[in-house]
Amino acid sequence: MTVDSMYQEIILDHYKHPHHRGLREPYEVEVRHLNPTCGDEITLRVHVEGSAEEGWRVADVSYASEGCSISQASASVMADLVIGKDIDAATAVYEDFLTLMQSKGQAEPDEDVLEDAIAFVGVSRYPARVKCALLAWMAWRDATTQATEGSPT
Amino acid sequence: MTYDVARIRKDFPILDREVRPGVPLVYLDNAATSQKPHAVLDAMRDYYEQSNANVHRGIHTLAEEATALYEGARDKVARFINAPDPREVIFTKNSSEALNLLAHTLPFGPGDEIVVTEMEHHSNLVPWQLACARTGATLRWVGLTDEGRLNLADLDRVITARTKVVAFVHQSNLLGTVNPVDVVAAKARSVGAYVVLDASQSVPHMGIDVQALDVDAVAFTGHKMCGPTGIGVLWGRFDLLDELPPFLGGGEMIDEVTMAGSTWAQLPHKYEAGTPPIAEAVGLGAAVDYLTELGMPAIRAHEHDLTVYALERLQDVEGLRIIGPTTADDRGGAISFALAGIHPHDVGQLLDEVGVAVRVGHHCARPACLRYGVPATTRASVHLYSSRTDIDALVEGLTHVRAFFSS
View 1 (cartoon, helix red, strand yellow):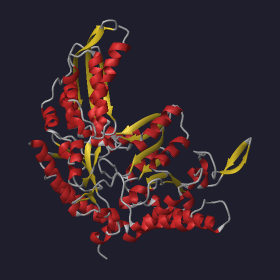
View 2 (cartoon, one colour):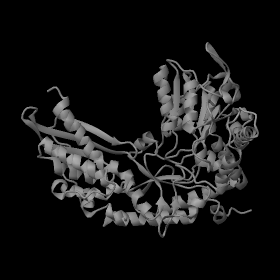
View 3 (cartoon, each protein chain N blue to C red):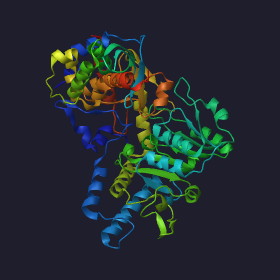
């Protein structure tokens, strides 16, 4: 095992050319998450459409972030994966990614579900870096939960 | 006798290991913790194999030996820092506990001010923030210059008649800066404030003389000075510690206990509730002997030479910016830097690939990182057994990092 298996080409591509980056309007909730051990940070906005009765859809996710290649690439991949999906479907992807990151390199991820996120399987072997990969996902989860459950409007 | 790094390195078994097959360890994370020489490991092993017993109680042979070893370690530490009285040396868990002890026992109230600096490790910042929250006192701080030094022009503004304590770091773990203790202490004295020094990064690399420094209390930790983890030191002036109330209650720290109330043991036991870290104290005593034998002036000179060399070589790396003083004057060998366009996490990961161990992150000094506009840094830090070869490996590793991310 070498570090090259962690820095997959897909990850470096997303790092160098991130998708959906930048903070956009409209949005319902903005959150800021920090990785306290290393100083990575992300400010993330979600825009959802729908209602509790009809179900919610992730209309947009935008973000501004600072951090290592793993955290930056993960934010880009995450935005690709959740934008346009129903919340339930996006949450299922989130759960799958969480499982992948807890797998210590053992998982055989489903590319149909996780798409580019399968490249992070190598990262899951490095405990110190798992938090980097999860930062954007945790921020998205937090913001989405607030947007669909927390806010009174 | 000349300072023979090759010979000294043989005292540290870990320095022989490979990180993975064919990749030798280059350990440059000494500001986080130091490695341990045979002498320390042997002393702790001998203690457990030959003399293990609880201290200050029991009259059997082992208990007496354990007590003599534990108290002997206190005497060694006292001599090492030139404390006038070994009862002024309190064994704690680490520097953080030593500083928490003071933050809890010094009396504060509304209107009082506690002064720190913007370059404090969280261990000398958060306890005082908590003290302010508890007592209604106000936290104030001395800012930093662009060069990574204390802004001494702030002293007159920040340290006033309301200041009750000035707590500051001797040598910054993030910036490497060695602060002018005399200047800050003199200002604190002029307003009648206590002076507390976080010497976690200075005791292991330059040694200190608590009497010459003219401060009221000093905190440092064993594991950064070639001793074990789990033991730290609070030194305080006898009159001060004697007057302050206890911190933690429990066994060992009492004089007389009834259901109605208790009275306290004399120093140092008043501040050592519960069974102390005995083997760790023995290990720390052995570390002090080891450092003394090499000689702190010789260690300091060696590390200064390495710092000069490292600063020079690092500044030749394209895109590298030192966070902290760029010359070795009044500076220790913890060197933080940013590499243009590459996050410290990625730097650290790729350096590990070639065996170079550095620390990445905010180094428990987040306010100082914010001050210099970086979320995190990469930090290389030397110790008495570091060599120019280590620095060369670091610089070569950084070239590898830049190549990886520029492709």
